[in-house]
Length: 153
Image 1 (cartoon, rainbow, N blue to C red):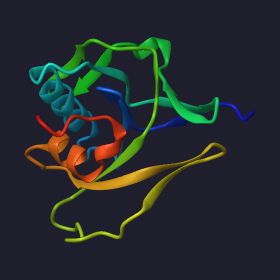
Image 2: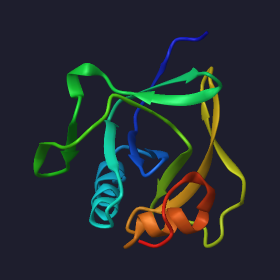
Image 3: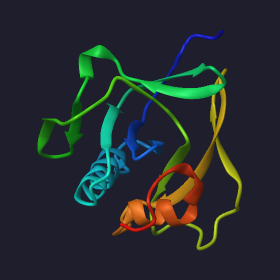
């Protein structure tokens, strides 16, 4: 079994869905994840951070699983403001990668069935989402209804 791969990303769990926010540095991965966590909690759903900035991904029992480095457990960067401690869990299965894109360069209707490769471990279904979306969790739930996020947010 290959060693876990370290991905520059943010991983969270909302309901039963493990979400991996990916994209270039500074695109807003942490902010988008934090917004999704807050939306889920306001709706009464279970939601927690797995890891911010560094996510270890491995294959366990046929699924891709995110884990966190011990040094950053429960910490998330709020760009321009500092590091915050929030509820977190040590690991979670992943169901979807959300690639954040700049709305100025985003395609209006991107190709369907895109995947995010995880070197040595396979791939995750991938959703492209503009980084300034007002209701990201609602968009994720609507576009991927089978991953375990409520559609009644």
